[in-house]
Image (cartoon, rainbow over all chains, first blue to last red; front, top):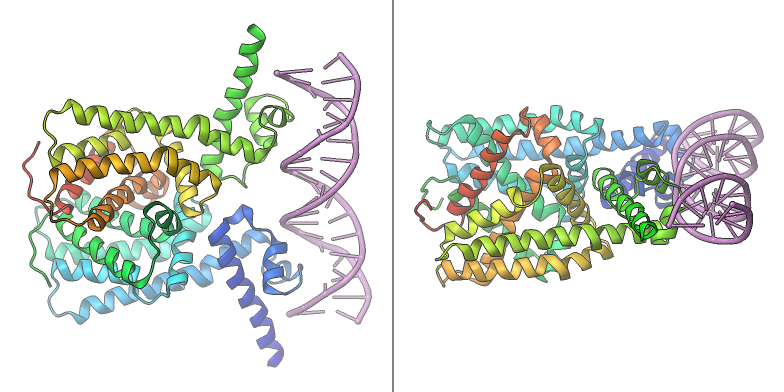
Length: 215
Length: 215
DNA sequence: GTCTATAGCAGGATAGAC
DNA sequence: GTCTATCCTGCTATAGAC
């Protein structure tokens, strides 16, 4: 049993370090040597636990990224139903909070969105998994939620584009944070965080082109 | 003279192929062998013309990316001044058209924004160059243009965030086009292009929270 | 300026001891 | 399950012929 724990521990720590390194540097810029060194274990451990580098990469998504995405989706759904009536303002607030504040710590969030941004830029077979397991379900929930509080004359295609717009803004502030810091000269301190989160909410609410009262 | 042209030709073709490969696969995923093979020239040509791989990468930005960004900036400024009075609608239309339609062909645009997305995700020293030569100048022009047509009670910080929002949406549709196609099941045909461009313009105009008439 | 040849190294993967 | 030792491929970079 103690042996079993130890196995798992090495395996889990490999996944943690791999995710961190893959997200910050990208798949090809990271070597197995670097990962095992950071994990403080032997080079052969990757082969033993995951058989090869590519499978380790996939496993990072399977056992780290997707469960985290599901937590976010659940957080969104729960907070939405906790509100009695679903208004547009509620949906947007809940969505943006789930993605940009939500259940993730700041570094965890950055890792999460840098990983998917690399896949968005150049999808691999990992992306198919994400779409099926996490992206499409969230998209579907969002679609239904918005449908309940937007005028019925808005077409499906326009609604889809508007949802993509909101994700565009949220992703941008997540994956490009180092670059944004350099350009506008502000750190992502808690004050700035709430500032751009509120700004995205406000921008999205008006962007959706419906006059709404403050929630 | 013919000799000189030939030199330049190899050098230029290397830059073209390098940009294409770096943008689609990322720096580390591309080897000099792959670049020279695609250029149909010798492996040593990179060393001769650029001394090493890193310098070739930098030169792609210096001689390809930045001139293209300057063309876009010029396109924006020219079209803006061609309109007599500067309204908010004009600024947003002109910006979005410059970035998403503008002077670039479709593949060229995708290359352009995939390259910078990789730098946004994980800035290298190339990014400092881009900020100085292209990003800050455009940002400054945009700031001035918006200042002329937005109520003066909007703070600088909010305006900056709103500009970033718009860029977030525009970048997203550019670099993630393959992923978006997979998720929503639509190709980037000319019809879809105009559709999402118009959607971003509309969303941005309302997002900026000022009631505007159609231009 | 272009090419061949090669030095020298880092990477992924695996066999086999413990 | 962990580790050492090693194979082998593919990379960057360069020396030197043409």
